[in-house]
Image (cartoon, rainbow, N blue to C red):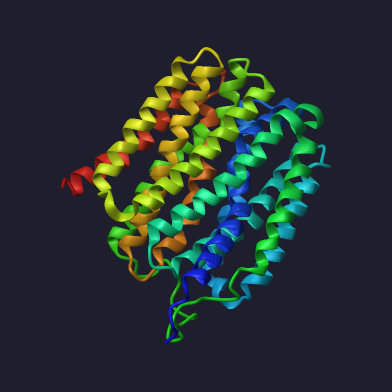
Length: 381
């Protein structure tokens, strides 16, 4: 049996896990501006643009499904360095390709290497006592770093150097974030009696855990579909590159605020009340996006939607953690995220064909409402 780590050590673990997880979240968090840049650079239609996003997260899914089988068997500091090199190298390689087929391959590699960083961050945090606070802090750090990246990408990089410049810039960001390897624990902090050779993570999960995972998938798929095409919605309103950078940077800052907000609230908000608050706020953001005719309406809609969506992600992740005290279910969160990120952009590309985004907004609304309804029916109190 091991002693509990000190507060200082816990902070180091949370911070290093959050920075590693930022590498894993980077492909998703910059997805709209990168897909928009790809669409402009390669003259891609909506279906092909969405397909690239889906292929990226097909690679992500492969990584997340394999990680639980070997995550406890490798040195986590070495894993951080190897995965960071793979992610940065894939981004750099994508800046040099000139055919659509190679773009598919390289974006699948980006997703694969990034997924190991997300799984590692989730694995480290699953050992910690307060799940909502740990996962909220992780998402807050991740989104705050991403906000700084998004401030620069559209106005300074993409407008001047197009997609190749953006890809090389992201490779450099990943290289800097890989320094978190010096603070990542070398292995699990769980008690010595814990068996790393335990059954596969998905085995013998309670039915409540499977239900929570399924509802998280539903919540994610429509909202991620919207996220993938948010830049295209702004472009249809003739939003300038500098304004677009401001929208996405502030959006991610607000996402970070939302994550820290849920971390501070912790377990004090009941799951039913939290779910309906998220539905109301997401709905307001979608209405503003639908009625937007210029920068202000688009920005307000995107910002409100992001704040609510991030809160929803943290609350769902905490619900999954609560549903399985063994901590195995939470290891499937990245896989659920990958599945929804595979399905979401592809479906969104079909819905948005022809440049009509109303159906896409309805898709996001339905994905948010359905999990809240199911939880209300099963747990009305």
